[in-house]
Amino acid sequence: MYGKGILKGLSVTAKRFWTTYWEDTVWFLRRLTGGEKRYYSPEGIARRSSKDARGIFTIQYPEEKLPTPEEFRYIPLLVYDEGDGGQKEVRCTSCGICAKVCPPQCIWIVRTNDPKTGRPVPQPAEFFIDADICMNCGFCAEYCPFDAIKMDHDYEIASYTRNILDLDHLLKSASYYEEIRPQNAAQENEARRAKEAAKAARASA
Ligand code: SF4
Ligand code: SF4
Image 1 (cartoon, rainbow, N blue to C red):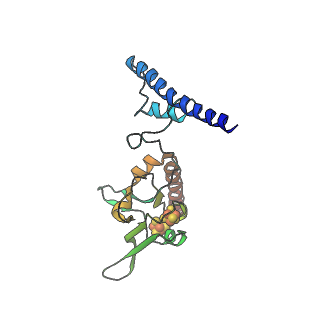
Image 2: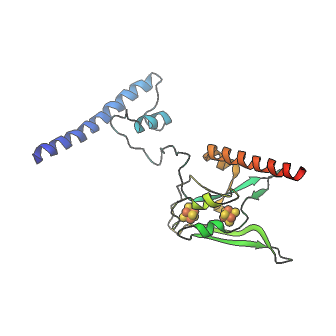
């Protein structure tokens, strides 16, 4: 009984092995007549990720990468809007809510103080996230009242040292955010516009 099971398992592996070469040949011949590439092309990746995949179904990382779904979460980013003069208008007010709700407490914020009056300015002077501790839960992004912190898609941040990300690493433009999360960004922009319109209507009433 065991012998039969082992043979059956080996036959599945052998079938997958030979089908890979067979499919490579078929795709190569198709390519000669202007067909799509099996490797290093979005169509090839889509085919190998589908239920119709035959033979190899792995991705040749890092040359190939799986498309990232919009709701994929990795380390947070801080959004800034681009002002008319190209200046970075950081949305974060350093209110500290994200740091409070972060379950592993991996966010540190230093608020800006006015050098003359010593009064707090709603802007972060420093903002750190310990990426080695962050568990990618997205709570910070959920709770931020200013749409200032969002979950990034960039997962290629491995290093030989501790990954403590500062403002230089965390700040990314609103257009980058709109590119990686188009539906989320469109909904948030719409909600923000509606809020501003309601505020303007109240002020003029
Ligand atoms: S990212 Fe949002 S929640 Fe966190 S400190 Fe800045 S404004 Fe507050
Ligand atoms: S994603 Fe979760 S763990 Fe990471 S910084 Fe945000 S709240 Fe903290």
